[in-house]
Length: 245
Image (tube, rainbow, N blue to C red; front, side, top):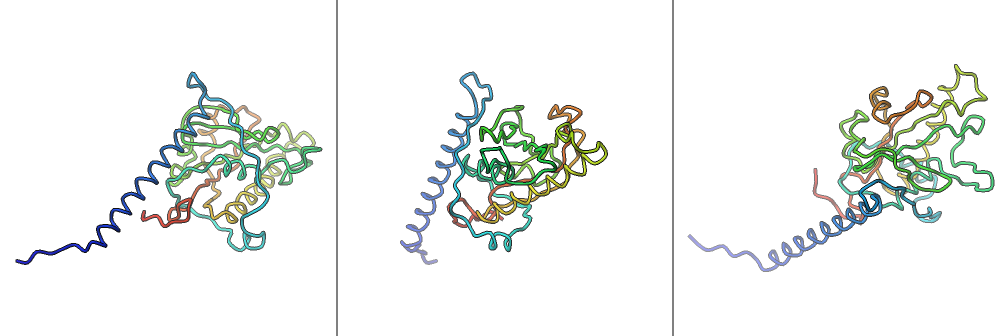
């Protein structure tokens, strides 16, 4: 039986692939350590996370983003950078007119009743638009508690919570109706940002009562919807193909 030789070029290619894989793993490990270090205080307690200022250049045009807007329920394993998380939240319901604290999405009678809670693997935060930061709420991974199998695979899950007490100018029977409309506008902003930046997202319904209890919400706070965000399953942050199926 003859001896089969493996071409030298195949060995070189395999070595390059292995080295590239190790480099990617090391980068993800370093990113994870960095994120953990800024999210936890010296005693291991959660602390507020300042978010980088959003950039208003780059990405696809508005019309192109609208043409590409879609729901995606499969997510890759990579985490989102704080800058990207900040831009997603700002696009959704950040302050775009600082003089009077007006927002990127409309709200009934400018009540600004919808809060964006952000579920990350290590903790639950709430977005504070005036400071453009994440304020800690509770430790633990709340992504899977939103009730969809794909939610735990997403880099983050936005939980839209309406504080109906802020809708004081509206009739009590219409407050939840207005909150639903306002949440729809916010979630569409997130959709368009994700389409512009080649990210994956999907908005979905959820089992509200047990999640509200886990989040320790007060009676005036109502969960409206959830929205998962992250990288698509087949695309890495640097645009290279991921072999995961």
